[in-house]
Length: 296
Image (tube, rainbow, N blue to C red; front, side):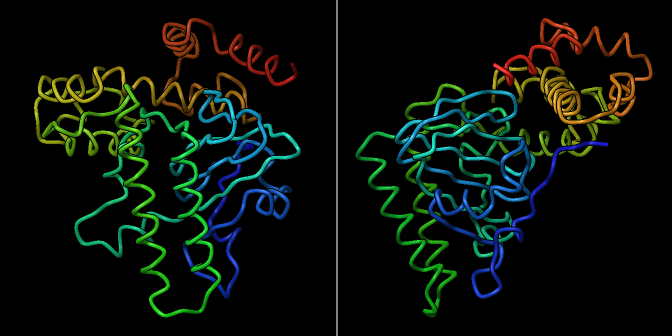
Protein backbone atom coordinates (compact mmCIF):
# COMPACT_ATOMS: atom_id res chain seq x y z
CA UNK A 1 0.00 0.00 0.00
CA UNK A 2 1.22 3.51 -0.84
CA UNK A 3 2.09 5.35 2.37
CA UNK A 4 2.19 8.84 0.95
CA UNK A 5 -0.71 11.01 2.04
CA UNK A 6 -2.65 13.42 -0.13
CA UNK A 7 -3.81 16.30 2.05
CA UNK A 8 -7.17 17.75 1.15
CA UNK A 9 -7.44 21.49 1.64
CA UNK A 10 -10.36 20.79 3.97
CA UNK A 11 -7.83 19.59 6.55
CA UNK A 12 -6.74 23.20 7.06
CA UNK A 13 -10.07 25.00 6.73
CA UNK A 14 -12.36 26.16 9.51
CA UNK A 15 -16.08 26.34 8.79
CA UNK A 16 -16.37 30.03 9.54
CA UNK A 17 -13.71 31.04 7.04
CA UNK A 18 -13.32 31.02 3.27
CA UNK A 19 -13.94 27.64 1.60
CA UNK A 20 -11.32 26.34 -0.85
CA UNK A 21 -8.77 28.85 0.43
CA UNK A 22 -6.53 28.97 3.52
CA UNK A 23 -3.84 31.36 4.74
CA UNK A 24 -1.70 31.38 7.87
CA UNK A 25 1.60 32.50 9.29
CA UNK A 26 4.00 29.58 8.92
CA UNK A 27 4.78 29.15 12.61
CA UNK A 28 1.10 28.73 13.53
CA UNK A 29 0.48 26.49 10.53
CA UNK A 30 3.27 24.11 11.50
CA UNK A 31 2.23 23.99 15.15
CA UNK A 32 -1.42 23.29 14.34
CA UNK A 33 -0.77 20.69 11.65
CA UNK A 34 2.51 19.04 12.68
CA UNK A 35 0.79 15.66 13.12
CA UNK A 36 0.17 15.30 9.38
CA UNK A 37 2.62 17.61 7.57
CA UNK A 38 5.86 16.25 9.04
CA UNK A 39 6.15 13.31 6.64
CA UNK A 40 6.37 13.51 2.82
CA UNK A 41 2.93 14.29 1.42
CA UNK A 42 1.00 15.78 -1.49
CA UNK A 43 -1.78 18.35 -1.67
CA UNK A 44 -4.91 18.59 -3.79
CA UNK A 45 -4.41 22.36 -3.97
CA UNK A 46 -1.82 24.97 -4.96
CA UNK A 47 0.59 26.22 -2.27
CA UNK A 48 2.54 29.46 -2.00
CA UNK A 49 5.05 29.36 0.88
CA UNK A 50 7.33 32.22 1.92
CA UNK A 51 10.07 31.85 4.54
CA UNK A 52 11.01 35.04 6.40
CA UNK A 53 13.05 33.58 9.26
CA UNK A 54 15.06 30.46 10.01
CA UNK A 55 16.69 27.92 7.72
CA UNK A 56 16.41 24.33 6.50
CA UNK A 57 15.81 22.28 3.36
CA UNK A 58 12.65 21.79 1.30
CA UNK A 59 12.43 18.73 -0.93
CA UNK A 60 9.96 18.82 -3.83
CA UNK A 61 9.70 15.74 -6.06
CA UNK A 62 13.19 14.57 -5.00
CA UNK A 63 14.93 17.91 -5.60
CA UNK A 64 16.24 19.62 -2.44
CA UNK A 65 16.25 23.40 -2.04
CA UNK A 66 17.91 25.49 0.63
CA UNK A 67 15.57 27.45 2.88
CA UNK A 68 16.65 30.90 4.00
CA UNK A 69 15.10 34.33 4.46
CA UNK A 70 13.29 35.21 1.23
CA UNK A 71 12.93 31.61 -0.01
CA UNK A 72 9.58 31.21 -1.74
CA UNK A 73 8.06 27.97 -3.04
CA UNK A 74 5.14 27.34 -5.38
CA UNK A 75 3.88 23.76 -5.11
CA UNK A 76 1.31 22.37 -7.54
CA UNK A 77 -1.30 19.70 -6.76
CA UNK A 78 0.18 16.20 -6.81
CA UNK A 79 3.77 17.20 -6.14
CA UNK A 80 5.39 15.38 -3.22
CA UNK A 81 7.15 17.61 -0.71
CA UNK A 82 8.51 17.73 2.80
CA UNK A 83 10.95 19.87 4.74
CA UNK A 84 13.48 19.96 7.55
CA UNK A 85 13.22 23.24 9.46
CA UNK A 86 15.04 25.10 12.20
CA UNK A 87 13.09 25.80 15.40
CA UNK A 88 12.94 29.54 14.73
CA UNK A 89 11.30 29.12 11.31
CA UNK A 90 8.62 31.61 10.32
CA UNK A 91 6.92 32.98 7.26
CA UNK A 92 3.57 32.67 5.48
CA UNK A 93 1.57 30.09 3.58
CA UNK A 94 -1.58 30.15 1.52
CA UNK A 95 -3.25 27.37 -0.40
CA UNK A 96 -6.25 27.23 -2.71
CA UNK A 97 -7.93 24.87 -5.15
CA UNK A 98 -7.76 25.38 -8.89
CA UNK A 99 -11.51 25.94 -8.97
CA UNK A 100 -11.24 28.74 -6.41
CA UNK A 101 -9.02 30.73 -8.76
CA UNK A 102 -10.29 29.71 -12.19
CA UNK A 103 -14.00 29.98 -11.35
CA UNK A 104 -13.79 33.68 -10.60
CA UNK A 105 -11.92 34.68 -13.77
CA UNK A 106 -13.36 34.39 -17.26
CA UNK A 107 -10.05 34.78 -19.13
CA UNK A 108 -7.32 34.04 -16.58
CA UNK A 109 -6.31 30.54 -15.47
CA UNK A 110 -3.96 29.46 -12.69
CA UNK A 111 -1.81 27.67 -15.28
CA UNK A 112 -1.03 30.94 -17.07
CA UNK A 113 1.60 31.69 -14.44
CA UNK A 114 5.01 30.31 -15.49
CA UNK A 115 5.72 28.38 -12.29
CA UNK A 116 2.42 26.49 -12.67
CA UNK A 117 2.55 25.95 -16.45
CA UNK A 118 4.62 22.80 -16.22
CA UNK A 119 5.86 20.32 -13.65
CA UNK A 120 9.27 20.85 -15.26
CA UNK A 121 9.45 24.48 -14.18
CA UNK A 122 11.40 25.40 -11.06
CA UNK A 123 9.13 25.73 -7.97
CA UNK A 124 11.63 27.89 -6.07
CA UNK A 125 12.35 31.64 -6.06
CA UNK A 126 14.94 33.47 -3.93
CA UNK A 127 13.49 36.93 -3.25
CA UNK A 128 15.51 40.04 -2.57
CA UNK A 129 14.88 41.93 0.67
CA UNK A 130 12.77 44.47 -1.25
CA UNK A 131 10.70 41.82 -3.02
CA UNK A 132 10.26 39.91 0.24
CA UNK A 133 8.83 43.03 1.87
CA UNK A 134 6.39 43.49 -1.02
CA UNK A 135 5.13 39.91 -0.82
CA UNK A 136 4.91 40.02 3.00
CA UNK A 137 2.70 43.09 2.77
CA UNK A 138 0.39 41.29 0.35
CA UNK A 139 0.26 38.22 2.58
CA UNK A 140 -0.74 40.47 5.48
CA UNK A 141 -3.57 41.97 3.42
CA UNK A 142 -4.81 38.50 2.47
CA UNK A 143 -4.67 37.39 6.10
CA UNK A 144 -6.73 40.41 7.21
CA UNK A 145 -9.38 39.71 4.56
CA UNK A 146 -9.46 36.01 5.39
CA UNK A 147 -10.31 36.77 9.01
CA UNK A 148 -12.73 39.62 8.27
CA UNK A 149 -16.47 39.62 7.70
CA UNK A 150 -16.39 42.32 5.03
CA UNK A 151 -18.42 42.19 1.81
CA UNK A 152 -16.60 41.14 -1.39
CA UNK A 153 -14.16 39.21 0.76
CA UNK A 154 -13.45 36.52 -1.85
CA UNK A 155 -12.91 39.09 -4.58
CA UNK A 156 -10.40 40.96 -2.45
CA UNK A 157 -8.49 37.78 -1.62
CA UNK A 158 -8.41 36.78 -5.29
CA UNK A 159 -7.16 40.20 -6.31
CA UNK A 160 -4.29 40.01 -3.83
CA UNK A 161 -3.44 36.45 -4.95
CA UNK A 162 -3.39 37.59 -8.56
CA UNK A 163 -1.07 40.48 -7.68
CA UNK A 164 1.26 38.09 -5.82
CA UNK A 165 1.35 35.62 -8.72
CA UNK A 166 1.83 38.41 -11.28
CA UNK A 167 4.65 39.96 -9.23
CA UNK A 168 6.33 36.58 -8.76
CA UNK A 169 5.95 35.82 -12.49
CA UNK A 170 7.97 38.91 -13.40
CA UNK A 171 10.72 37.92 -10.96
CA UNK A 172 10.56 34.28 -12.04
CA UNK A 173 10.84 34.96 -15.77
CA UNK A 174 13.69 37.43 -15.30
CA UNK A 175 15.70 34.93 -13.25
CA UNK A 176 14.71 31.46 -14.43
CA UNK A 177 16.30 29.62 -17.32
CA UNK A 178 14.12 26.54 -16.82
CA UNK A 179 10.79 28.01 -17.85
CA UNK A 180 8.52 27.30 -20.78
CA UNK A 181 8.62 30.02 -23.39
CA UNK A 182 5.38 31.99 -23.24
CA UNK A 183 5.96 33.65 -26.60
CA UNK A 184 5.37 30.39 -28.46
CA UNK A 185 1.95 29.57 -29.89
CA UNK A 186 2.71 26.01 -28.84
CA UNK A 187 2.08 26.61 -25.13
CA UNK A 188 -1.59 25.56 -25.22
CA UNK A 189 -0.80 22.27 -26.96
CA UNK A 190 2.14 21.67 -24.64
CA UNK A 191 -0.09 22.15 -21.60
CA UNK A 192 -2.67 19.78 -23.07
CA UNK A 193 0.10 17.23 -23.66
CA UNK A 194 1.22 17.40 -20.02
CA UNK A 195 -2.36 16.98 -18.88
CA UNK A 196 -2.74 13.92 -21.11
CA UNK A 197 0.50 12.44 -19.76
CA UNK A 198 -0.79 12.90 -16.22
CA UNK A 199 -3.99 11.09 -17.16
CA UNK A 200 -2.58 8.24 -19.26
CA UNK A 201 1.10 7.63 -18.43
CA UNK A 202 0.37 4.37 -16.62
CA UNK A 203 -1.12 2.84 -19.75
CA UNK A 204 0.23 4.88 -22.69
CA UNK A 205 3.98 5.15 -23.23
CA UNK A 206 4.09 5.96 -26.96
CA UNK A 207 4.33 9.60 -28.17
CA UNK A 208 2.27 8.66 -31.23
CA UNK A 209 -0.70 7.81 -28.98
CA UNK A 210 -0.56 11.27 -27.41
CA UNK A 211 -0.17 12.88 -30.81
CA UNK A 212 -3.35 11.10 -31.92
CA UNK A 213 -5.19 12.38 -28.83
CA UNK A 214 -4.01 15.90 -29.66
CA UNK A 215 -4.98 15.48 -33.33
CA UNK A 216 -1.46 16.27 -34.53
CA UNK A 217 1.45 14.27 -35.95
CA UNK A 218 4.21 12.81 -33.80
CA UNK A 219 6.68 15.05 -35.62
CA UNK A 220 4.69 18.14 -34.74
CA UNK A 221 4.36 17.02 -31.10
CA UNK A 222 8.14 16.76 -30.86
CA UNK A 223 8.46 20.17 -32.47
CA UNK A 224 6.16 21.59 -29.76
CA UNK A 225 8.02 19.98 -26.86
CA UNK A 226 11.47 20.87 -28.21
CA UNK A 227 10.42 24.47 -28.75
CA UNK A 228 8.71 24.75 -25.36
CA UNK A 229 11.19 23.03 -23.05
CA UNK A 230 13.93 21.57 -25.28
CA UNK A 231 12.93 17.96 -24.61
CA UNK A 232 11.36 15.30 -26.80
CA UNK A 233 7.87 13.94 -26.19
CA UNK A 234 9.41 10.58 -25.26
CA UNK A 235 11.63 12.24 -22.65
CA UNK A 236 8.66 13.95 -21.01
CA UNK A 237 6.64 10.73 -20.85
CA UNK A 238 9.64 8.86 -19.46
CA UNK A 239 10.33 11.55 -16.84
CA UNK A 240 6.75 11.32 -15.56
CA UNK A 241 6.98 7.54 -15.29
CA UNK A 242 10.33 7.72 -13.49
CA UNK A 243 9.02 10.34 -11.08
CA UNK A 244 6.10 8.08 -10.19
CA UNK A 245 8.51 5.17 -9.84
CA UNK A 246 10.63 7.16 -7.38
CA UNK A 247 7.55 8.07 -5.35
CA UNK A 248 6.46 4.46 -5.13
CA UNK A 249 9.96 3.15 -4.41
CA UNK A 250 10.39 5.54 -1.49
CA UNK A 251 6.87 5.84 -0.15
CA UNK A 252 5.27 2.43 -0.63
CA UNK A 253 5.78 -1.00 0.91
CA UNK A 254 5.21 -3.06 -2.22
CA UNK A 255 8.06 -4.87 -3.97
CA UNK A 256 10.01 -3.41 -6.87
CA UNK A 257 8.44 -5.99 -9.20
CA UNK A 258 4.97 -4.87 -8.08
CA UNK A 259 5.94 -1.25 -8.61
CA UNK A 260 7.09 -2.04 -12.15
CA UNK A 261 3.79 -3.82 -12.83
CA UNK A 262 1.76 -0.92 -11.41
CA UNK A 263 3.55 1.37 -13.88
CA UNK A 264 2.65 -0.82 -16.83
CA UNK A 265 5.74 -3.04 -17.07
CA UNK A 266 5.31 -6.81 -16.88
CA UNK A 267 9.07 -7.38 -17.00
CA UNK A 268 10.92 -5.93 -13.97
CA UNK A 269 14.32 -6.34 -15.65
CA UNK A 270 13.16 -4.16 -18.56
CA UNK A 271 11.78 -1.53 -16.18
CA UNK A 272 15.02 -1.58 -14.18
CA UNK A 273 17.04 -0.94 -17.35
CA UNK A 274 14.84 2.02 -18.25
CA UNK A 275 15.18 3.43 -14.74
CA UNK A 276 18.96 3.04 -14.77
CA UNK A 277 19.26 4.65 -18.21
CA UNK A 278 17.41 7.70 -16.88
CA UNK A 279 18.84 7.93 -13.35
CA UNK A 280 22.24 6.29 -13.69
CA UNK A 281 21.49 3.81 -10.89
CA UNK A 282 19.12 0.88 -10.41
CA UNK A 283 15.85 1.19 -8.44
CA UNK A 284 17.45 -0.74 -5.58
CA UNK A 285 20.45 1.56 -5.43
CA UNK A 286 18.18 4.62 -5.70
CA UNK A 287 16.30 3.50 -2.58
CA UNK A 288 19.55 2.83 -0.70
CA UNK A 289 20.91 6.25 -1.69
CA UNK A 290 17.70 8.02 -0.70
CA UNK A 291 17.49 6.27 2.69
CA UNK A 292 21.14 7.05 3.32
CA UNK A 293 20.52 10.74 2.62
CA UNK A 294 17.54 10.81 5.01
CA UNK A 295 19.56 9.15 7.79
CA UNK A 296 22.56 11.43 7.33
